[in-house]
Image (cartoon, rainbow, N blue to C red; front, side, top):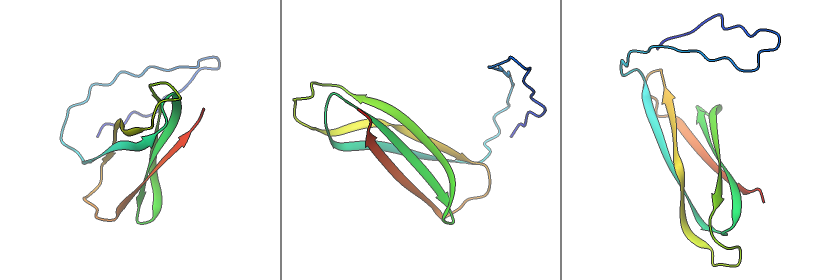
Length: 107
């Protein structure tokens, strides 16, 4: 793992680009959560979130907004692939990881 310290923003600086060369050392463990939605209405936007808990405590969350293609009057889509949500754990192996998947129509 490579840490970058002392990143400072100037008064009117909105964006800061930081370039880093990182050597891959197989640190940590990857949790990949492929998310599929079932029976979704076409022509709608949905926000999908994956929450990760360790020992019952909130650890991380990722969200993605997706648009379900199709005409609103069409039949529901039986299965819709959203994305793979990836989480990297840098500490030792754990068997006490839980996830919650949330989905909500936003229009």
